[in-house]
Image (tube, rainbow, N blue to C red):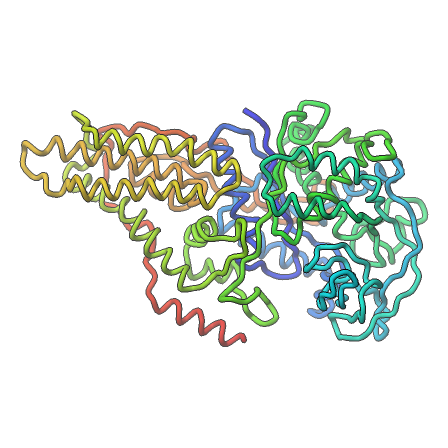
Length: 600
């Protein structure tokens, strides 16, 4: 058994999340975590809502509430949505806890003590009409490097280069279109160039990363610049230095505190389990966690934060950049094993846009369709390595042709025939070559599918699992057990159905990481009792350090299926099954496109 950290990108709490968001960070991380647990590894899956920064302040002002009230509202919405999808977090928390503040400030102090955080006077963007600071992401203009006319003040999405807002050509506020004023202000900067050599050597040792992630990350090292980690804000983590900690106009920038959330959530999880030092099994680079692995899941717009900036923070805190230094109080910390980045999901040929209502929120989706139908689409057709378009026609086709007519049909007809003719799982006698061949296809699927999930090739993995389903459907059609009606043929009919049911059981296990809700149902249809696919729970908790209470996602994932074939027991009672999946009418496409049209 090894310790595996699944560090999942933090959804921003300024509104509900849409299906494009969860296709990048949510479902892929859960598939991986569920498989790794089933394979016997000790998994810690953590994340939470990202709740600081000016965008929260701007949205709160627009809604006439405080930033905390806005964050509370959308934290709960997001927790409920991720729960509905069955994402098996060990802890899904938030960045407004006092525990998080303490860990962020500890890393800041460690980096500062080692000389990796320095004060500089720089230019800050101010709104002429309000006098308030404009965040970098709320300034747009032409990129001075590639000429892209919609570059943001912190990064150009076209060429990927880091930017400062004053570098933009013809900068403008995304809030009201006005030209910002730039005034001198003092801030703290992370000395990123001091980590170029260490990060470059670390990237050179990365193996089996997705090529787009590795290439993009290496290119970023060519022109690293110091990066501001504080901002003129009222909403965020206070700066833990004398003369700064009590100021109301300066805060730690949201990108700095959010990536530290992986560590703070792990520490919070450990404290809530009653073993405050347990997090070290996944994080300690020179202790019991030195052989642990850590996988970070996100969309491609977050690569820079996880493959360059977060490693820089970890290296600097551990005293391993160009300037050396001593490890902070938490000790040396593990770097990521792999940054698993997905591409973008579009919708009906357009970019997701909440303002233009080219969007379907997770909550709305789950009100109308099954969670596993969405999980299946993301796994089978999602943006794993290329931008992918979600269309309602393709969603309905995959649901009806693959889930209902393929997997659901195999489950229904094999269990129905066994229940009708035997009332239980029949015994198998005198296996033929065809029987043994199908059983072998299912058994070898565990190694094939498991290896693919472990390498983050989930499209290929679910394709192999569905190939087992297709072979079983073909076997049933060829063996035609419904034609074996005489007393002499009864043993053969029972054998065929036993083999089919065994493969249903095996295929169900192979599909469990992808389809946990329906896999529990299939397990029970086969006579199973207890937990097959453990689910997260929403728990209302008190802040460990005296702050306001809040909801978290947690779960006990020690029970459930193992990643292996489990022989069925002849004589286990069976009842006539109910359909596992819902067939969708073609009219769904027109109805959903009409909803999009109304918002256009």
